[in-house]
Length: 79
Picture 1 (tube, rainbow, N blue to C red):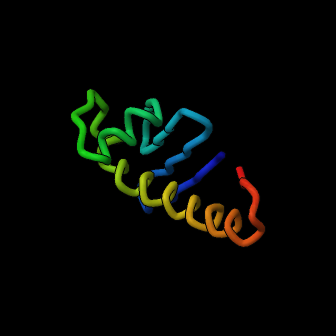
Picture 2: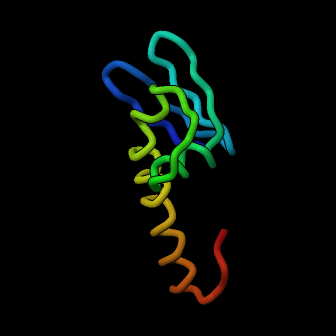
């Protein structure tokens, strides 16, 4: 899975289990840690990742909805 989020001042890329944020400098973190922070857990993350954590969570959830709907329509598991 690869997700790209563009902001006026930064670019966010989620690829596999890594999150990359470029806003003048490159910051990298684990997707699991970013998701845990977005869900309310405390995490030791750079501020750049904390700022985009909720947007990443929303993007991932938005991508999962069509997959679940297609799975129900055809009656088999979709990955």
